[in-house]
Image (cartoon, rainbow, N blue to C red; front, top):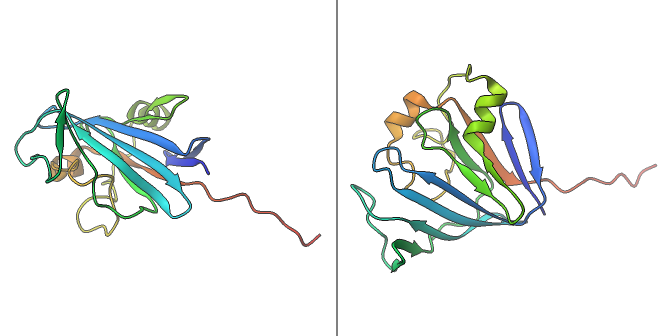
Length: 164
């Protein structure tokens, strides 16, 4: 299994079955982190962490405070796709595997020249799922400032053609 990232008209495959996402909340300026696993059923969240609390960002039941981070296990089922809003003002997304780290906003802005402007599909009313459970608190702000969406999903297995 590997992780596919689709953004700005490009698809990138990362040969990893685990990854972490981190970002800074756009209003509270508090860092969030999530650990994920790529499985045949989809993307499974293993743990979430938030460095502090703020308005509307209370730690969920069962969270434990360790070294300044609230750690918890979100009760989400496997996700077929994670949609991450990209662009100026979205708090940035850092995706890390055991081998590499990517700044998804910087990569998008470099490829797209920051010229595309449309609302991300993970906002209310889109019917799409978004990563985590609380990180899109400032949805109206994201709707106005997001430039695009990065879609994360398990890469489709390679097809073999046995009919020669």
